Amino acid sequence: MAGPDHRSLAWTVLDSVRTRDRLATAALRHATERQNPPPEVVSAAHRLIMGTIRERGYLDSVLARLVERQLPRKDKRLMDLLRLALYEMLFMDSIPSYATGSRYVELARRSKGARVAGFVNALLRKAANLDPTAELDARANLPAPARLSLPEWLLDAAQTVFGESTEDELAGLARAADIALRTAGALPRSDLLEELKREGLSPQPMPENDRGLLLPPGESPYQTMAFARNRFRPQDRASQFVTDLVIAAGRGDLLDGCSGNGTKAIACAESPRFTSVTAADISPHKLSEISARTTLPLRTLTLDLTAPDLPPNSFDTVLLDAPCTGLGTLRRHPELKWRRKPADSYANGKLQGALLAGVAPLVKPGGLLIYAVCSFLNAEGPAVIDNFLATHPHFTLEPPAQHLTGTAKELTGRLAAANNTLPMHKPGMLLTLPSVMDGDLFFVALLRRAG
Ligand SMILES: C[S@@+](CC[C@H](N)C(=O)[O-])C[C@H]1O[C@@H](n2cnc3c(N)ncnc32)[C@H](O)[C@@H]1O
Picture 1 (cartoon, protein in one colour):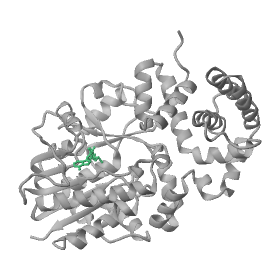
Picture 2: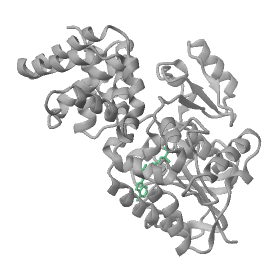
Picture 3: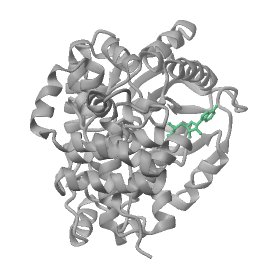
Picture 4: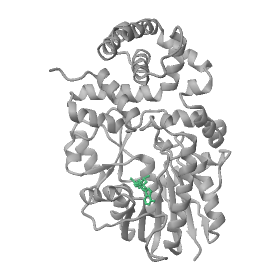
């Protein structure tokens, strides 16, 4: 029996993203594990899924214009199908639009019957007559939520943070992400670069450190021998930036609170900077992955860090890479902009505050507490730090650039200059803005405990 084509695969994945609360990348992996389609089908499905999710707000505005009465918004699966079809017609030019339309009509017929297929057919015939270039030109005149394809509350929240540069920063978050890797262990980066080139990929060195590599969005490194041999770990550029900051600014005994499966903790353990590295997380499952990812002697602790049962003053450096909305990872996980709700940021802000208060006593006098989240929302960044400083006057903010040298310092200088122009900016706090650095958007703050 023939396997699924990229359209039916994409439709299945969108359903699973919506109904099972999965990330699109995880849902695609799950679907392909069962069905095992050829790599070119997976890669076309990936482009179609990510693009459709990213452009959902814009696509809905075009569909609403084409439909005679109202869009069938209650039938979410049908809405997914219409968005996929329109995305393919406007943004992917593999076959003529009318032919694309008929493939989706056929999918609708098989899954939903002749009546719904008739409706899809009528709508997609109109869509097939659209001129993609003219449509994209007309986009500039749409109201902001449709033009930028964002829910209104998130656009408002972004405007509070970014002010006049809102559209630039959101455009950065709407780009397809480069794939970023970090060389594992003591392997020289140049060796990994050559190995990946021999396997047909086109890696570039990450300018600001000597461990990172960047691959263009379409290239997957996960089928390579280098991956099978654990020669690198996937790690986004901004996440590497935070890791490098921890390595440069920290010392002594390090606690990576909220370590997850240890991406940052392992990179820190590979650096000679720390005498010991402890990875702690509330999830024993995530911690259990660390031993499969490294042979380095990392201590792992399953702990609720809002009330950690550890002696005070035990660590010179504490990293708190706290749970958050993840809205700074929209390039890789665009579904989060439709999934998150305003209340999420406040709930997260409360938990982040409790985690900071939980780990603060563990920092030795004179030691450093580094707070990071991959979110740009005020409620998860500046507001959390302001509350923390108000209740912990023995901590002060420390600007990151002073710890860095070379290209990393220069990049941090550019980030700081761009941060200075933001309305919500507070000196000493840093957002890794996509207009400056093509990576996730992290918020990071260095908090020094008085000696
Ligand atoms: C943003 S992720 C960390 C990612 C990780 N540092 C990395 O570099 O891949 C946040 C982590 O916080 C953990 N977490 C959530 N609530 C926690 C709590 N109360 N105590 C400890 N860890 C918690 C989650 O299990 C999750 O692994």
